[in-house]
Image (cartoon, rainbow, N blue to C red; front, side, top):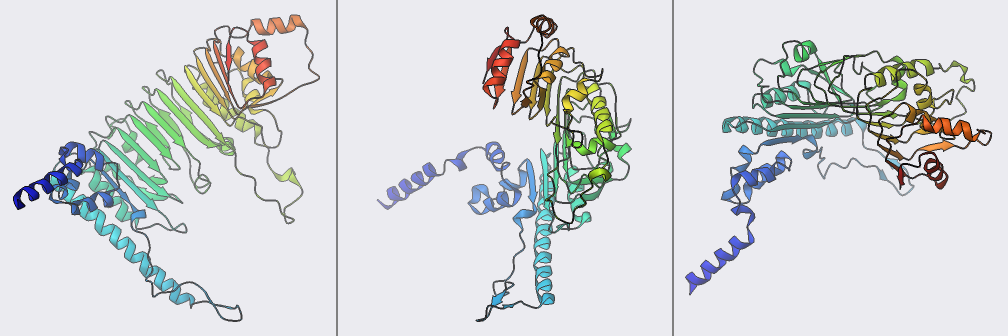
Length: 453
């Protein structure tokens, strides 16, 4: 009777733990979705899970898993007496306790990462992804540069297919660890750098004898990587959306990627004024996206100088560089433009100013998305753009604004000529967050297209 009860309990337990009955490959794929410290903790579940963490294809080291903790008996908060006065602890004692807590947290992080990479190396299996997340406190690095570089070098020896490094806050200078002789880069197809300033011989990374023979996807966020050249690169993303980082280094200077099929730029509008870059011919480029970021205005105060004449007018260089950038995209079939609003001092419609230049003609463009753009008085900027995209079939307008021009009066003959020279291939126009006047005006102008919300 006892044996039957015992057997029944085992079967019930096995039925409840169906996850452990899965093969190792599936369990490791599931564990790859967790951070490495969580993965290691699963070794305490049962014998079945004891060694699974050693061969998980993704290593994800995150400094947030090792927070700075102050002893409970170390009260760093202010204490008020009966009179309401704050009795602060001595600043030296506070700083010392905080320093010790931070030192202990970094030591725990370092011990964990070193041991994890050591045991992972013993498994002898190739790594799919190496992911590092390092958070900086008050602009200071959480750990040393040598410590992070050591993890990257050891991870690269595991022949990863992808590497993802994020330094939150002010960018951190790092040596060009990709040129390390012990690194195995033969499988590395994907690189993502965020807040990393690679120093050293960048030419060795992207030169003629490239150390990245199979690189396909490269994402550079708030990082310095001025020279990008690859015969295998197909997807490139360049994003600078951190105000703390865009003022300290050159964003990018040269792009040479003959097989590039998808290109995405996201950068502050003001940086276009002094941007110096070259892009070689991109014969395979099919999809492109440009998003212009507008800096948040600073709060006004009485101390501000009332004379705005000292602020330089950057209209011409911004338009010039933007035209150069769009000129490299002239053969794309899909284009997404975002943030093309007004210029700061002149309040000129940016997209209209760009279209006035001869370089912005897209003969092969079939799909166009305009997001958060100014379409000008009476939608004249939109009509001009449609003249420059004769093959366009699909158009999406999202959060776009325009101004009615009550003084614009055109004869029916002039309007007929203007409409006749516009694209006739346009089949679908999607308007998101647009008013009824915009919809009705577009319907009258483009009767052959279906206009939807």
